[in-house]
Length: 388
Image 1 (cartoon, rainbow, N blue to C red):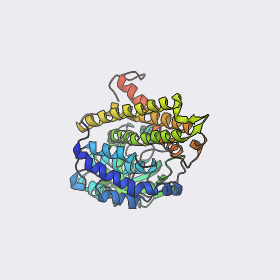
Image 2: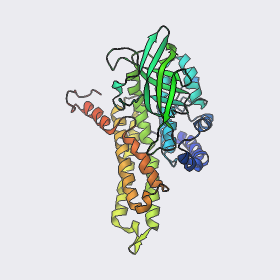
Image 3: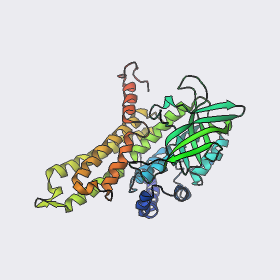
Image 4: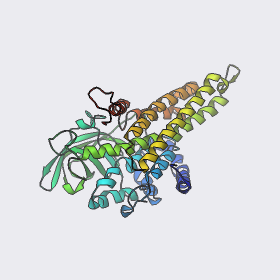
């Protein structure tokens, strides 16, 4: 069983925090196109939620990954997608590799303040010419004595305008593309780091997203996470948690939209009765709720295996793929039942429709998820079964 009675107290605490400290402000943050990350993260850090499964020695709670999944699922109750995504970057995208492979020195400098909420983290992987194709990144970190000198740029960087440091994937040699990359913690205040612009997105409006340039940025090699040349491997391992976390964060968000649609269609009258009374509507909502439960079962199964120390690349990839596609299908169907009101930005279904679209793109597009699965099945041309 993934969740036990031990999860109940932190779950209730997080539910209360979301209800009192986040949801009352979501509309304001959506309108502003940003939320106060330092203020909110510090509150979460004080409650221990930014390091549930991180090492105790660096301020974490030392719990297993089931607690991170519990948190991800509860964050789905936030009435927008941008804030949960930003929190997830801090807890399950920019810091897992650091927590697992970083030296004690680099973990004290970067992980400890991230867990405490004293610093905001972001992750720099995607570039304008290399989104899902991680191996094709061009940002380079040239060796110069005891330092790296970094040049290049990153795109679509969540938390980028507010971050104190970035977990940066860069080429540290000219070798084979899967063996020439390293993950490096780079302070955003370093000379030569430029936040070029805050990006204007279709959805996830309350989350700040940046394009970042690096011009001869010098950082000590001690800021590297783990071994040189292992960054691609570390990032692929980190993706397991990122993708599973992202899928789990969709569950309550999807259920909320289903329930809001039920209430709206029950009260909306047309042709002498409520919209909900039409069989095509109530049957479709029942189908969508079933799909959410199927996704939950897949995520919980993957979570149990991850807690047991197993490789969950296959199941996490499936969960990410299904979460993205269900998000598109569910929000589109529900928006249709809202009619003209569904097209208005003031309605929750409109926001969900825009926010959910990113799940099929961020953290690896649907097509990449399918490529990974086909490699593991041995059906991708040129691949052998079991190779991811």
